Amino acid sequence: MAYSDDLPQALLDKGKRASDIVNTYISGMPFDEIKTKYIAIRLSDGGSDGVLYDTKQDAVKHQVHEMQCAYVCLNNLRAGSTPRDMAIFIKFNRDAYYKGFRLADPDAKDGGPDVVMTTGQRDYYSGRLG
Image 1 (cartoon, helix red, strand yellow):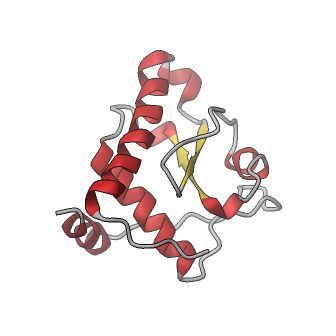
Image 2 (cartoon, helix red, strand yellow):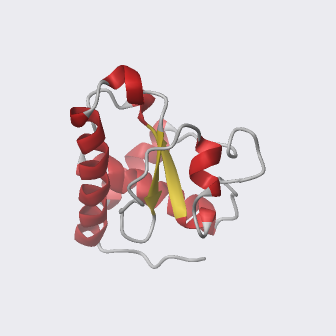
Image 3 (cartoon, rainbow, N blue to C red):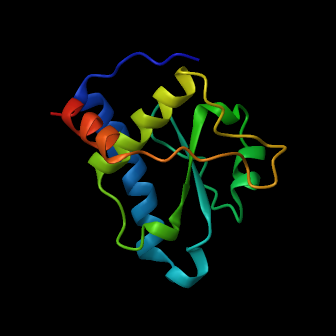
């Protein structure tokens, strides 16, 4: 599924929605209880199904279309996330899917591979948000 290029403000709005979801969990629950949990973030609007999953595989399996989501582990988000960071995360995952990467696999024990963003890619996506 190809996503159109959002204007920077539209992408930041999606990032705000996603960061609000992440930050609600981070601030509302003891970190030791949620640090290994996953959230499925919709690439279309930055929203979520509202479920905190025990594993990435669970998160992937419970989506209607697993390739329309990005999967966030809360482990590295102890301080929460920003709208800009989540906008970059959403755009990066959209582009990876568009270019043929299959990031979600409901049959894989680990839920599928993760693509790691390089520093150069981070700079590229940051520049696109103005």
